[in-house]
Length: 111
Length: 115
Image 1 (cartoon, rainbow over the protein chains, first blue to last red):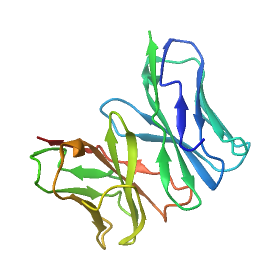
Image 2: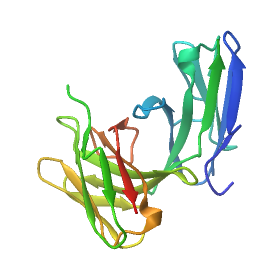
Image 3: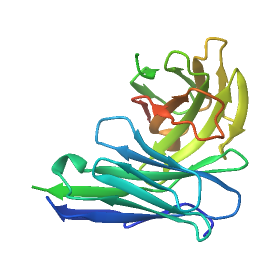
Image 4: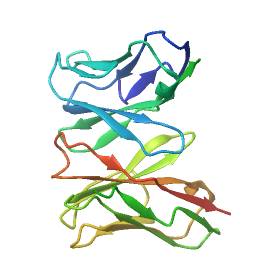
């Protein structure tokens, strides 16, 4: 992996479904991984910052895990609600300081 | 606390002109980063400033420049505008020296259209 990659690009789920998406990143020079939620017509909002292999973070129905050795992070949403509809971005910061974003996963939750 | 503010919110320019965008961070925040968002490229890192010093720079041509003032407010300038510079420009601030795990707080962005 040379860049930060997110999959899938887009996802449509029904209200109440649980869902997850992936952020893959180069494991060399890794320093931190950030997850953001970006709703239409709003500013990106920080969800989590993770640094250690095996880190797990939780905020309400949203949680994230981190595997720095293999270079991936999962974001989980339990019991999706229409208000969860947004673009979910991950970004990695290397030890050199540069922050690199993935292209995002667009989540649409249908009532 | 007031959030990150960016001015102007919308801007229309023509090719060859230059433009200056402004960002006021959250009070007390000393680090400011700038990003360009285009549909095809996603969020691309432009620069990062801390205490008036540029700490990191993304892969953008020299037409893109920035600075940070002693009150942490930041400006970015784009000279000789090209059509491809049409984008949403986002500014983000954080409390400490970026490069660690500080949360970045984003502004609403400036939508630049180059005709």
